[in-house]
Length: 79
Image (cartoon, rainbow, N blue to C red; front, side, top):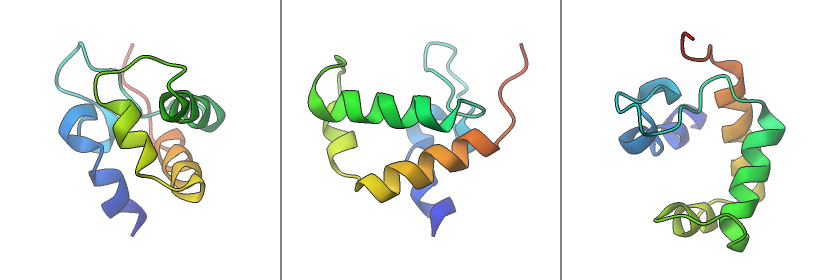
């Protein structure tokens, strides 16, 4: 179920949180607390966005925590 939930991020952020488009931020390898904070900021409108403020409102807090943990567990992009 978590993998299916994370797949909803793939259209923009790429498969496994590594986007093909360099302009899109990767999610893989980001600290869980950072992702949670960003999702909360999108949800509240504190962080400006084109669509993420709407998308973030569609997730429960438990789903945000689970997604953030999933992406944190993946290897980040090569630097």
